[in-house]
Image 1 (tube, rainbow, N blue to C red):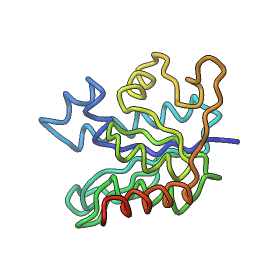
Image 2: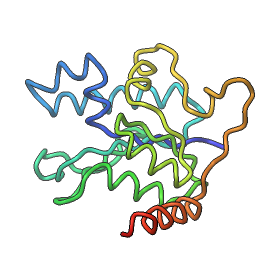
Image 3: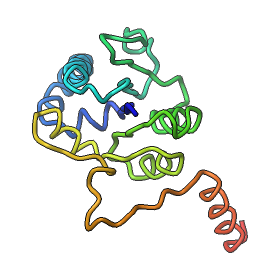
Length: 169
């Protein structure tokens, strides 16, 4: 099955030294450079179905329409919406069958998306991969042959409900 990448754009920009340097003088240049790097990366990887990059902020604020550039889809959040919430909603709505690998340095986002069936990858690891240095997604980092158990969304909901019950919430 082909995988789909879902990237927290600003997390990755700040995890990648070259992109981070472009962010201060001109954020648009950093976003453009990230999209270009992702496009090249997607072209090298035949196991990817799609690459989506999510940025916080309304598209009007950046004069950049949401859309697809050579296989890389740019998504800008609406007013009052964060990239974190949009990413979790995308993974939840599309389900485990989409084969998402979520790229972020935000542990809460990674964990929530994981509960919906996505693999997780730290933005700093993916930045290394963009630079041509090997990085591995969670599924390929398994050690000692131990099988990892995936939590279903239903299991996650049951655990959350039990936790709230014990806290009296």
